Length: 186
Image (cartoon, rainbow, N blue to C red; front, side, top):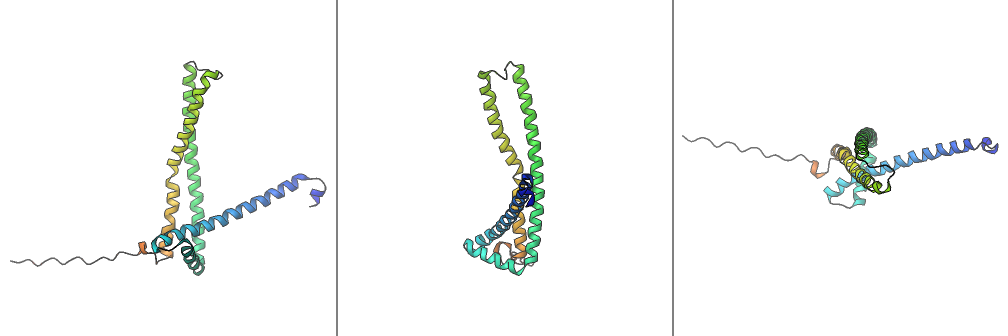
Protein backbone atom coordinates (compact mmCIF):
# COMPACT_ATOMS: atom_id res chain seq x y z
CA UNK A 1 0.00 0.00 0.00
CA UNK A 2 2.86 2.37 0.74
CA UNK A 3 4.19 1.87 -2.79
CA UNK A 4 0.90 3.14 -4.19
CA UNK A 5 0.95 6.16 -1.88
CA UNK A 6 4.50 6.90 -3.04
CA UNK A 7 3.26 6.97 -6.62
CA UNK A 8 4.36 3.52 -7.81
CA UNK A 9 1.44 2.64 -10.08
CA UNK A 10 3.13 -0.52 -11.37
CA UNK A 11 2.76 -2.14 -7.93
CA UNK A 12 -0.96 -1.38 -7.99
CA UNK A 13 -1.30 -2.75 -11.53
CA UNK A 14 0.68 -5.91 -10.73
CA UNK A 15 -1.30 -6.52 -7.55
CA UNK A 16 -4.59 -6.00 -9.38
CA UNK A 17 -3.47 -8.33 -12.14
CA UNK A 18 -2.65 -11.11 -9.66
CA UNK A 19 -5.99 -10.64 -7.89
CA UNK A 20 -7.83 -10.66 -11.23
CA UNK A 21 -5.98 -13.82 -12.30
CA UNK A 22 -6.76 -15.56 -8.98
CA UNK A 23 -10.46 -14.67 -9.24
CA UNK A 24 -10.51 -15.82 -12.87
CA UNK A 25 -8.94 -19.20 -12.02
CA UNK A 26 -11.35 -19.65 -9.09
CA UNK A 27 -14.34 -18.82 -11.32
CA UNK A 28 -13.17 -21.30 -13.97
CA UNK A 29 -12.81 -24.04 -11.35
CA UNK A 30 -16.26 -23.34 -9.89
CA UNK A 31 -17.88 -23.29 -13.34
CA UNK A 32 -16.13 -26.55 -14.26
CA UNK A 33 -17.40 -28.20 -11.05
CA UNK A 34 -20.94 -27.03 -11.80
CA UNK A 35 -20.56 -28.22 -15.40
CA UNK A 36 -19.36 -31.62 -14.24
CA UNK A 37 -22.42 -32.04 -12.02
CA UNK A 38 -24.65 -31.06 -14.93
CA UNK A 39 -22.84 -33.53 -17.23
CA UNK A 40 -23.36 -36.25 -14.64
CA UNK A 41 -27.02 -35.30 -14.17
CA UNK A 42 -27.95 -35.46 -17.86
CA UNK A 43 -27.76 -39.28 -18.16
CA UNK A 44 -29.55 -39.63 -14.81
CA UNK A 45 -32.28 -37.33 -16.09
CA UNK A 46 -32.68 -39.23 -19.35
CA UNK A 47 -32.56 -42.78 -18.04
CA UNK A 48 -34.54 -42.33 -14.86
CA UNK A 49 -37.08 -40.07 -16.57
CA UNK A 50 -36.80 -37.28 -14.01
CA UNK A 51 -36.39 -33.53 -14.30
CA UNK A 52 -33.15 -31.61 -14.24
CA UNK A 53 -33.43 -30.54 -10.61
CA UNK A 54 -34.28 -34.05 -9.42
CA UNK A 55 -31.34 -35.49 -11.38
CA UNK A 56 -28.99 -32.82 -9.99
CA UNK A 57 -30.29 -33.58 -6.51
CA UNK A 58 -29.58 -37.30 -6.97
CA UNK A 59 -26.09 -36.65 -8.34
CA UNK A 60 -25.20 -34.19 -5.58
CA UNK A 61 -26.52 -36.48 -2.84
CA UNK A 62 -24.52 -39.38 -4.29
CA UNK A 63 -21.47 -37.11 -4.50
CA UNK A 64 -21.77 -36.18 -0.84
CA UNK A 65 -21.49 -39.87 0.09
CA UNK A 66 -18.44 -40.50 -2.10
CA UNK A 67 -16.35 -37.33 -2.05
CA UNK A 68 -12.99 -39.08 -2.74
CA UNK A 69 -14.34 -40.63 -5.94
CA UNK A 70 -15.68 -37.26 -7.09
CA UNK A 71 -12.34 -35.59 -6.35
CA UNK A 72 -10.54 -38.23 -8.42
CA UNK A 73 -13.13 -37.72 -11.18
CA UNK A 74 -12.45 -33.97 -11.18
CA UNK A 75 -8.68 -34.49 -11.23
CA UNK A 76 -8.92 -36.97 -14.11
CA UNK A 77 -11.35 -34.65 -15.91
CA UNK A 78 -8.89 -31.76 -15.49
CA UNK A 79 -5.94 -33.81 -16.77
CA UNK A 80 -7.98 -35.08 -19.71
CA UNK A 81 -9.07 -31.49 -20.43
CA UNK A 82 -5.47 -30.25 -20.44
CA UNK A 83 -4.31 -33.07 -22.71
CA UNK A 84 -7.27 -32.64 -25.06
CA UNK A 85 -6.78 -28.87 -25.29
CA UNK A 86 -3.05 -29.21 -25.99
CA UNK A 87 -3.73 -31.81 -28.70
CA UNK A 88 -6.46 -29.64 -30.25
CA UNK A 89 -4.17 -26.60 -30.21
CA UNK A 90 -1.36 -28.56 -31.91
CA UNK A 91 -3.71 -29.90 -34.59
CA UNK A 92 -5.20 -26.44 -35.13
CA UNK A 93 -1.74 -24.90 -35.41
CA UNK A 94 -0.70 -27.50 -37.99
CA UNK A 95 -3.84 -26.84 -40.04
CA UNK A 96 -3.28 -23.06 -39.85
CA UNK A 97 0.34 -23.46 -40.96
CA UNK A 98 -0.76 -25.61 -43.91
CA UNK A 99 -3.39 -23.00 -44.79
CA UNK A 100 -0.79 -20.20 -44.61
CA UNK A 101 1.53 -22.13 -46.91
CA UNK A 102 -1.33 -22.71 -49.35
CA UNK A 103 -2.22 -19.01 -49.11
CA UNK A 104 1.36 -17.98 -49.86
CA UNK A 105 1.41 -20.31 -52.86
CA UNK A 106 -1.89 -18.89 -54.17
CA UNK A 107 -0.59 -15.36 -53.63
CA UNK A 108 2.58 -16.13 -55.55
CA UNK A 109 0.57 -17.68 -58.40
CA UNK A 110 -1.69 -14.60 -58.52
CA UNK A 111 1.37 -12.32 -58.57
CA UNK A 112 2.85 -14.34 -61.44
CA UNK A 113 -0.44 -14.01 -63.34
CA UNK A 114 -0.17 -10.24 -63.07
CA UNK A 115 -2.41 -9.38 -60.15
CA UNK A 116 -0.97 -6.48 -58.19
CA UNK A 117 -1.25 -6.28 -54.43
CA UNK A 118 -2.14 -2.60 -54.52
CA UNK A 119 -4.51 -2.61 -57.48
CA UNK A 120 -7.94 -1.86 -56.02
CA UNK A 121 -9.75 -3.69 -58.80
CA UNK A 122 -7.87 -6.88 -57.98
CA UNK A 123 -8.19 -6.66 -54.20
CA UNK A 124 -11.82 -7.82 -54.27
CA UNK A 125 -10.96 -11.31 -55.46
CA UNK A 126 -8.21 -11.96 -52.85
CA UNK A 127 -10.48 -10.46 -50.19
CA UNK A 128 -13.28 -12.86 -51.07
CA UNK A 129 -10.78 -15.69 -51.32
CA UNK A 130 -9.41 -14.80 -47.87
CA UNK A 131 -12.91 -14.72 -46.37
CA UNK A 132 -13.79 -18.10 -47.92
CA UNK A 133 -10.44 -19.52 -46.79
CA UNK A 134 -11.09 -18.42 -43.19
CA UNK A 135 -14.51 -20.12 -43.26
CA UNK A 136 -13.08 -23.32 -44.71
CA UNK A 137 -10.19 -23.21 -42.25
CA UNK A 138 -12.56 -22.82 -39.28
CA UNK A 139 -14.65 -25.74 -40.57
CA UNK A 140 -11.60 -27.98 -41.04
CA UNK A 141 -10.24 -27.13 -37.58
CA UNK A 142 -13.61 -27.85 -36.01
CA UNK A 143 -13.90 -31.10 -37.94
CA UNK A 144 -10.38 -32.19 -36.95
CA UNK A 145 -10.93 -31.47 -33.26
CA UNK A 146 -14.41 -32.99 -32.87
CA UNK A 147 -13.11 -36.26 -31.39
CA UNK A 148 -11.66 -34.43 -28.39
CA UNK A 149 -14.87 -33.11 -26.80
CA UNK A 150 -16.55 -36.40 -27.70
CA UNK A 151 -13.82 -38.22 -25.76
CA UNK A 152 -14.36 -35.91 -22.77
CA UNK A 153 -18.10 -36.59 -22.89
CA UNK A 154 -17.45 -40.33 -23.14
CA UNK A 155 -15.47 -40.26 -19.89
CA UNK A 156 -18.52 -39.06 -17.93
CA UNK A 157 -20.74 -42.13 -18.53
CA UNK A 158 -17.79 -44.42 -17.80
CA UNK A 159 -17.37 -42.77 -14.43
CA UNK A 160 -21.12 -42.72 -13.88
CA UNK A 161 -21.39 -46.45 -14.55
CA UNK A 162 -19.05 -47.24 -11.66
CA UNK A 163 -20.15 -44.43 -9.38
CA UNK A 164 -23.93 -44.42 -9.77
CA UNK A 165 -24.75 -48.06 -10.42
CA UNK A 166 -28.55 -47.64 -10.45
CA UNK A 167 -28.65 -46.17 -13.95
CA UNK A 168 -30.65 -48.48 -16.19
CA UNK A 169 -28.51 -48.50 -19.40
CA UNK A 170 -25.49 -49.67 -17.44
CA UNK A 171 -27.19 -52.69 -15.94
CA UNK A 172 -25.70 -55.87 -17.19
CA UNK A 173 -28.03 -57.55 -19.68
CA UNK A 174 -29.71 -60.65 -18.47
CA UNK A 175 -28.70 -63.48 -20.69
CA UNK A 176 -30.92 -66.45 -20.95
CA UNK A 177 -29.26 -69.82 -21.08
CA UNK A 178 -28.91 -71.25 -24.51
CA UNK A 179 -31.51 -73.91 -25.28
CA UNK A 180 -30.25 -77.41 -24.95
CA UNK A 181 -29.84 -79.22 -28.22
CA UNK A 182 -32.64 -81.61 -29.03
CA UNK A 183 -31.69 -85.25 -28.58
CA UNK A 184 -31.02 -87.03 -31.78
CA UNK A 185 -33.54 -89.69 -32.72
CA UNK A 186 -32.37 -92.76 -34.43
